Each structure stands twice: as C-alpha cells, then as structure tokens.
Image (cartoon, rainbow, N blue to C red; front, side, top):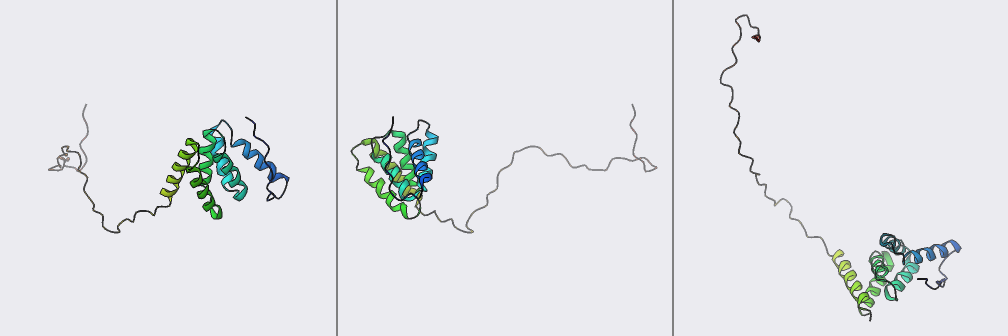
Length: 159
C-alpha cells in the first residue's frame, strides 16, 4: 500500500534529512516487524519530525503492526518530546478505532510501570541459611600408617 508523499515541515536542514525521513516513513509500514520496530526506535530520536510520523502512524488508518511499533517509538521518546509523546498516547486511548485505543492503553501501562521507583532493599538484614547437603557416607580416616620395610623403603609390588 503506497502512502501519499509527506509534506516537509520546514524543520529539515537539507535534502538528505528529507530523504531519510521518507525512507524511515516507508519502512514503518513494512511487513517485517523487526524492521518496523527498529524504524520506530530511530524515529523516536528525531524530535518533532519523528513525533509527527509516529503520531500519524498511531492515529491514522494503518496496519496494526505499524500502530504497535509507533506506540513503541512514542514510549521510547526522550527529552522534551516525552511529554508530547505521552499526550499522543493518551489521545490514542480515546480513538474511535478499538485497536488504536487498546495499543495506546497498553503503551501507557508499560510507560507508567517504567517510571515506578525501584523497591528499596534492606541493607544488612538478610539471613544466611545453610543449604542441606547430600547424605553420603564418608571415607573412614586411616587409623594407622601403612607398614614400611625395616630399611625405610616403600614396599614393592609383587606379581
């Protein structure tokens, strides 16, 4: 399925960045899910332009794998775009498409779990328990040393 050509936003600095965004946008709708997720991750690093493309994929009429990858990319947004990405996911929960709403809810759940502080571990209050060993008979300790020859040499073996 061919998408209409993306209109440059004016934030791109040169022709190479416009082409890169076009390629990433096309890869976002690929049939290979790993390529789609990698593309969404790359778009998450591209600030406003990446947010626009991921937002279009999540809220538009796109396949489910593109929507879930877009939600993944929005979850991975860092810096000043993270709040806008979270707002986009909240907007997706109220979307008329049930798949978009479900994907957005799941992404928000994962996003909120990641922000939860780690459970503090008590320092120095752990108990060392003994691990029971296997019950096996021990070798008896030698009672007496082996007899030696009177001249102090070890006994020779006889055949």
